[in-house]
Image 1: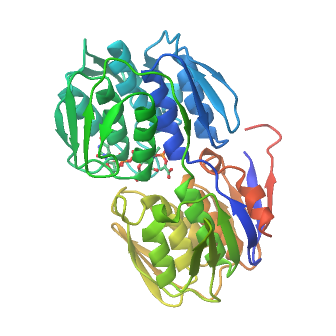
Image 2: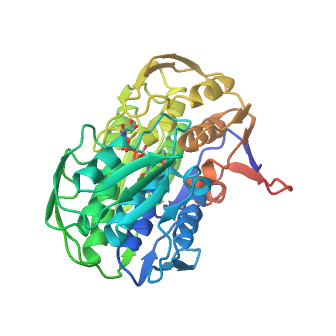
Image 3: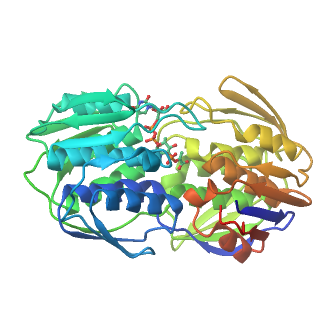
Length: 421
Ligand SMILES: CC(=O)N[C@H]1[C@@H](OP(=O)(O)OP(=O)(O)OC[C@H]2O[C@@H](n3ccc(=O)[nH]c3=O)[C@H](O)[C@@H]2O)O[C@H](CO)[C@@H](O)[C@@H]1O
Ligand SMILES: C=C(OP(=O)(O)O)C(=O)O
């Protein structure tokens, strides 16, 4: 397994460019199932999760060209309706093929994604929504089997705001007969990006980005070209990297309006943020102030930034209370942050972080994607050398992170595992 070696204590400075969004690209790739033909997706990040999605599409019979920024996906000759356990278990977003397969072919068989480090993450709301559109759903041998001659529009009210559930239903309803209304829909920017792709394909969708989305089903969709939105979580991670090192970083190709909740909290902590000519400049103070956060669905504070913000609060002047309200087990980074000398106490879904004078370099292990990012941030601020293992989690979601950090003056090296694991 590859690992990262970081010699901390360098203030980051300079310019960095944000890649396309993982969480927007995944459903957009999957939406190509809905329309036979050749789609062109640009601003695609080079990530392990993108490769997994390509494998899922190829398993269905798609042909995919290009592994870089521009990816062409031809879904003319799909000949399988199954996403297998070996792929779905490595990336839960693959379960999103269910709705599009059902809508285009009337059948799908998809492995249940199962639990993962951050929580149980059931898909009951996806299945309830598809059933409301008329799908017959059975669960057998760890697989969801769904069938429907023709999906029919319905009114669906989500019990809780679900990003994946909203994306699943948005795609299925695009080819259903009649109108579908999604109430208490998720409002994340990635939903808007997916809706824009679907609209380019000919779908009729109103209200994406609000909690009520109306979809009027059409008979067929056609291939589209789309450029993926910038990754707001990667951008947020670099904002925190500037803040935690007392650095001065200019971030290009990001949407600050997608990160209001984080930006307000960083400003409360004493971080300076300016936005000029679409370049966001982030300057960290010598010492950040402690602030409290509660994770919420968008436009609230993103759960995908909680671990990184906690790393920052480890060095704050005072105590910070961090509540995780989306996933029941998203404090796996705490035990690793303690190795750097952090002072954190967890009770239920709340972590109390008392700022310490300094963090010291340590050997640590990444447990999930954003936990990996928080360990990198702590290591960047630590006074000596850290070794971060299990960074395959990181490679799911951060394109060329060590190169981008090195470009900002960080002393970071990837040690490749010669066995290729
Ligand atoms: C690939 C992708 O875009 N992943 C993002 C997506 O995950 P994902 O789409 O899986 O997250 P959801 O928004 O669906 O999950 C929110 C909450 O709803 C629960 N739930 C969800 C579906 C369901 O059928 N039943 C149910 O109970 C989940 O367990 C969780 O507690 O949104 C999360 C919340 O912003 C982010 O952290 C993930 O980075
Ligand atoms: C939790 C995340 O991703 P996924 O939903 O793919 O696990 C994430 O991007 O932080």
